[in-house]
Image 1 (tube, rainbow, N blue to C red):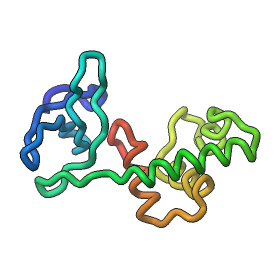
Image 2 (image 1 turned 30 degrees about the vertical axis):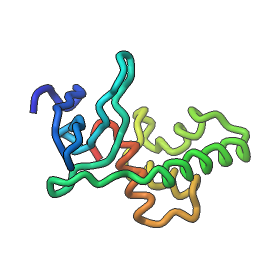
Image 3 (image 1 turned 90 degrees about the vertical axis):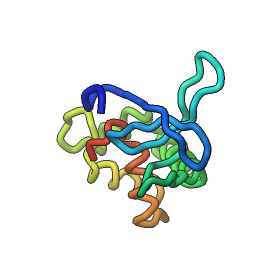
Length: 126
């Protein structure tokens, strides 16, 4: 792997006869932008040499749940983040994120929580 853990390095890979970009540190797979100025879009995760696509329905439920929660609490996102950042380090660990997800999406399954926790873990540190 080129680059350190704090750097975002994507390499081109071919999966199922399609070209993608792979972050080997997190095993996340991204679409290749078609136009200049576009960013890669998250497509899924590499597992056993295959692309496992992320389901967008869970992401939409999270966004809707977060929106509903913010409105019901009359809170800003920063305030919600701070309320779950128990050690006040400016980041959420996996337990903090799981607690937040369970409040925002009370009907979320353990799989939903794990999926969204992975999705929100941008640097892949768990």
